[in-house]
Image (cartoon, rainbow, N blue to C red; front, side, top):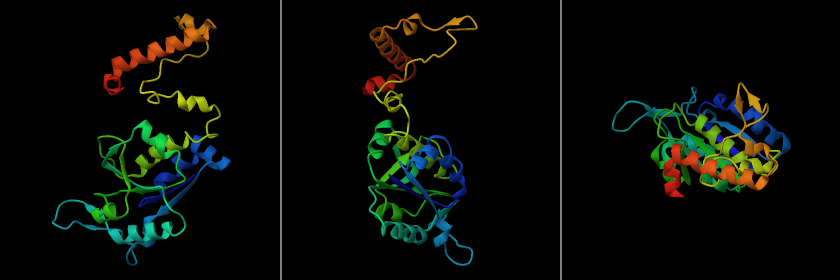
Amino acid sequence: MRIDIISAVPALLESPLSHSILKRAQNKGSVSLHVHDLREYGKGNYRQIDDTQYGGGAGMVIMPEPLAKMIDKLSESRTYDEIIFLTPDGETLKQNTSNQLSLTQNLLLVCGHYKGIDERIRQKYITKEISIGDYVLTGGELPACILIDSIVRLIPGVINDETSALSDSFQDGLLSPPAYTRPQNWRGMEVPEVLTSGNFKQIENWRTDQAQERTKSRRPDLLEKK
């Protein structure tokens, strides 16, 4: 898989994309991540990429021409399965979306900044708009990192124990059950006896019950959807 990211502040992406699972995935050749500085196509000596809004109002807007030139240039070399704009008014990111995107070959992510991007870019180029929640951040770089992480960890071979990703919260519409590790007794608190019984059928049933109870108490809306 290849993921290209267009950003007005590419330095914000450097650390999140070069450590942990994402670093391992790139070293294995499972994914290639390419960050592109939008200012390469900026206007004039100062490489301007933003301007004031028509109609007045606070905040600057990313101009259409620099973005269009960069998208056109990148699209010359490959066909993108999706061109995704990270924006607060997009569809809220769900596990199923990450599952679907993990099956694609080429993705292009556009990170908004300032008051966003010119609406005409959204109309002409963007095929999918994604939000990571009902709040506003300075730009789309951090949401892009979250989206990338949620996708890449699902690619076969990225996580050593591939069944781990399939048992994460939300994969089956439920939250994950409680998890325990050594020591068996920690400060007087015991691991539930069923987990040390060796009876895997009972353990599976216990985890299912716990997942349902935890979801019911913390995220009942998920059960309603399920």
